[in-house]
Length: 82
Image (tube, rainbow, N blue to C red; front, side, top):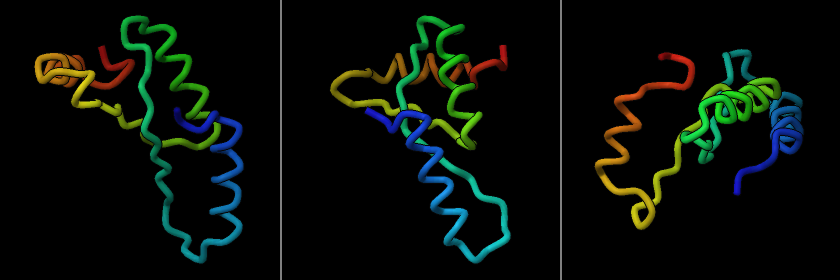
């Protein structure tokens, strides 16, 4: 289970307090969004975006997701792109 957005916010704050670089920071999490409910998936993604997450990587578990489903999800593209 991924960190909830509130915990991600604390992690981002810690990183920002201790990093020395001024370069842009990408914050990436692995999370399974409810792709059978686009509105719920978009809302979940929005919650993470609000705390600074720039990428949500879909965690495809090999024993749970077959290659056809992975290809179908890739063809659908990012949330909100259709």
